[in-house]
Image 1 (cartoon, helix red, strand yellow):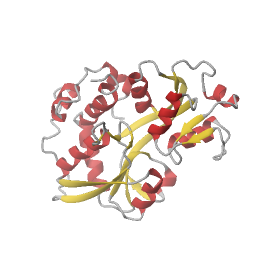
Image 2 (cartoon, rainbow, N blue to C red):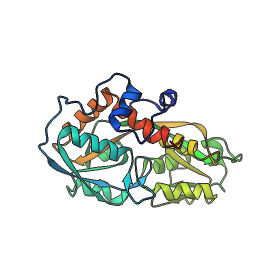
Image 3 (tube, helix red, strand yellow):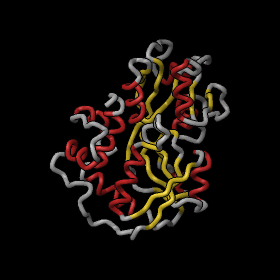
Image 4 (cartoon, rainbow, N blue to C red):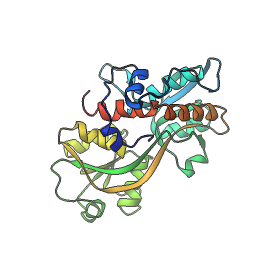
Length: 278
């Protein structure tokens, strides 16, 4: 992440209803406006078809009115304006996204995708737009375990995870025994379904990246908490078919939006203000 959540918490809160340019000014001070012309590639109105899942709040999800919203959508709207491009979104399941982008069915994919070397064999990644760590989320009244080791030591405890994601693999290999069929990991099709199972008591623990975990806990009014130490660091990037000529323009947009405070404003809006109910 361009600005760590701990630093964001100290920043002045910016209402989510503010236009992004004003939010950037509030968070970043006298930095350049995101609408200001910059030395970025001109894609001449090119259409970019982006694969999305809409199941990973607050990066991308469906709001109460049925609209697709989130950090990544706001980023893409801003990037498209700066690069002179048009974005079209197509919904696809998480497990099908990387293969579909690899095969060229889409120009790009996004849903909080961790940059990993094994995935680079199938797709190209943008530069990281966010950096996070894995944290353990539990119910607010949980007292049976306090960290990964004590969770692993109790065979009656269950973890929620979405197969194929970084939290799934960290749960399997860093918390448990490396067996991907371990019945202690209850698999859910979406992150949100696993989180609901945790809140309802159907499972006992769930891993999330730190940006999301801190937001969910802050918004839970004590129903959730974080325990233990962070487990590893992950970087999120957008994915493209191998050799895509969109990687360089998107990297340029990420760099420009990091430099002028736009990424920090998006972090503020979606991870801090949203958690605080603003």
